[in-house]
Image (tube, rainbow over all chains, first blue to last red; front, side, top):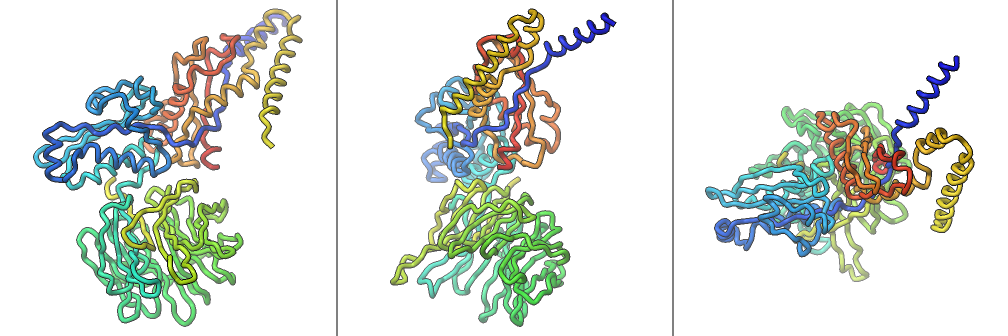
Length: 446
Length: 144
C-alpha cells in the first residue's frame, strides 16, 4: 500500500514538474502594421527607356508609390517614411539588412526591381518578414509598359493577401454616375475609374439619363438603367469591348437591376399599378420570372454570394424594412427591426453581412448587419448618403454622399466615399465631376 | 471609471497574496516548496507578460472570425527572457489547403514574440518558466 502511495506521489510530482505553463493571449493591437515599401530599383538604361515611353522619370518609384498608397488607404498598414530607410533599393532587393529595417520598426519589407525587356515591363518584387529575417513571397510580372499602374495594384493585392489572409481589392474598377450642372438639370453620364480614382473615363455622352450601374461579379460586364422616350430600359455594357445591348423593355417602371452571383441572371423590380415586385431575367433565354407577389413596394434586391437567398427592402410591414427570402421567393423573413427606415440592402461577397442605408430622425446612415439581422452596426452618419457597394473582398464599402445646399440653392455636391468595416477609415474618392451610384468590380486578375 | 492607481493596488495585492502563500509554505518540507514553484506564474506575473504581448501582436484583420483561430506556440526562454526557440504546436495546419489564414495568424504570433523579446518574465524561478506555451486566440478581437 505504502509503495502504491509513493508511486502515485512520484507520478504527481513528476507531472507537476513537467507541466508547461500556458498563457492565453486573447488581445492584440489593431494598429496598422508598420511596413517599408522600398522603391523598386531600376538600371539606368531601363529608366531612360521607360521615361521615353511613359513620360515618367523613374517608373520603379512610381510603382512603389502606388503600392504604398494602396496599403496606406486600406487602413491595415502603415508604410514608413522613405527618408528613414537605411539601405539602397538595389541592395535591399538582393539581401536586406534586416537589422536596419528592424531599427526603423518595419515588420515587413517590400523590395523589387524593374527592367525593360524586349519592349516590355518586367517587375520583380519580394515581400520579407523583417522580424523572422526571411522571404515571404517573390513574384515577377511581364506586361506592356502602359500597364504599370495595374502592376502596382497587383503587387498591392499580393502583399495584402499574404499579410492579412484575405484577397485584396486594389486591382479593381469602380463604375459610377458622373453628374454635372445645376441640381434640377443634371447631366448624368456613366463613368469608370480604377479604385484609386485614376484612369477616369466617361462611357456615355450624357444625352440620356443613366442610373444604377452594377458590375457583373464574374466579368467586366455592367448592367444599368437608361431612359429612352421617358421609359427606363435595362442595358448590358461590356467594358472591355464597348458593346452594349438592351436587355428588354418592361411594362411600367424598372428599378435597380443587379446581376446574380454567377452573372447569368439579372434581378430587378418592376413597378405597376401602385405596387412593385421583384423579378429575375435569365440572360440566355430572356425568360422573366416573378419572385415576389405582394401588394407592397418590394425593391433593391441583392443575391447572397451562393445564390440561394435574396435580400430586398419592402414596406409590407408599414415602413420600409429589410427582408431575406429564398431565391424562389419563399420563406420571406424580416431582418431589420431597429428604429427608422432601412433600404438598399447589399449582400457582402463574403456572405456574412448585409450592408444597408438607414434613415432615422432626418439623418442617413450606412451600416451593416448579420444576415439574420443581428449585430447591426452603423458605420457612418451624414445629411444624405446611400447606395453602398462592397469591395470584392467584403472589407470596404463605397457609397455616395450629398451635401446640403444653402438658402440660395448653392453648394450642392455629390461625392464618392469609402469606409471599411471598422468604421474608422473613411475616405473620399476624388472624381473629376460630382458622382453617385458607385459599383465596385471584382478583381481584374486573380 | 478607470483608475490606474486601483489597478496598481490590485497588482500589489496579488503580489502580497502570492508572497503570503510562499511565506505560509516556508515551514513545509523542501520538496513541496519546489512543487509550489512549479505550478505556474502568479497572476501579476502572467498579467505583466500578457500586457507586454498584447502590445506587440498586430492581429491580421482580414481573418475569418468563424474559423478556429487558435495558434499555440511553445517557447524556450533564456533567463533574461529572450527566446531561444519557438515551435508552432499545430504546425501541420500551416500548409493545409484552405488554411491559409492559419499561416497568416501563426506568422503574426511569431512576429509578436520576436518583437516583444526579451519577455517580461519573473526575476526568479527560471526552472518554472524556462518553457512557456502561448495560446494566441484572435476570435474575441475579430468578432468585436
